[in-house]
Amino acid sequence: MLSEEQRAEAVASLLESHRTKVQGERPSQMFPGIEIEDSYAISSAVAERKVRDGARIVGHKVGLTSRAMQASSKIDEPDYGYLFDDLVLQDGAVVPFESFCVPRVEPELTFILKEPLKGPGVGLVDVMRATEWVVPSIEIIDARVTEPRKIYDTVADNGAAAGIVLGGRPVRPEDVDLRWVGAVFYRNAGIEETGLAAGVLGHPAMAIAWLANKLGPLGTTLEPGHMVLSGSFTRPVWAEKGDTLHADFGPLGSVAVQFS
Image (cartoon, rainbow, N blue to C red):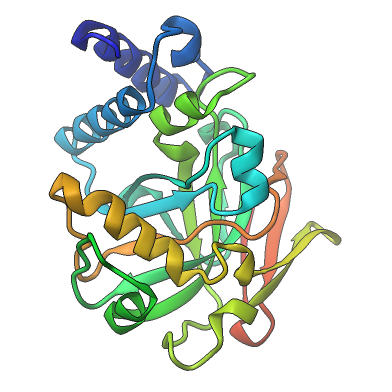
């Protein structure tokens, strides 16, 4: 476990990387004794600093929701980070490539809540009942720390959250079988990835249940109006300057973002 001084040093390094868009040293390299609790404390401290500086928390993201990604990170559960109002973009957004260190993108489903959720004991039906809309989305992820990252570094870095692009045709959660929502993910004219939302813990709503149960014992409630990214069901795709990334969700429409 790290000392408060060590955690503060990691927070300062991450905030500097956010400011300069230059990758900083990995917390796990700075402090080999880091534990996952330290990483979440560092992420929360960065979030608190952002809120003090004027940002507003509008929800959370869940990551590492597939078995393959968990195995590659040598963990047995997902992770989470915070979503801020300045990360939310609309379909067709053009974003400066220089606003990121090394951006990648993933197709996901975003759950917009109409009722509060607080664990423990939250299940799939509770999530479906509490959700107003499910929205096709693209998540932009970024690494504010150098490679090779460990899970401690990704968690401390707010789960790599860097943007969320909302689009497509929002649906009520009961109107479609969310397990079978699929996406064809393009970079420019080429197909990079395809996948089904069932790859997210068997049902994407289970990612929101996991988050509610993870945060509930910490005193945190998922609030009405908040959005929760449920996790990618494809591998991340690299974005280069000038690229347009386009996720075609079939009957649920499409969503795109361009890096200028």
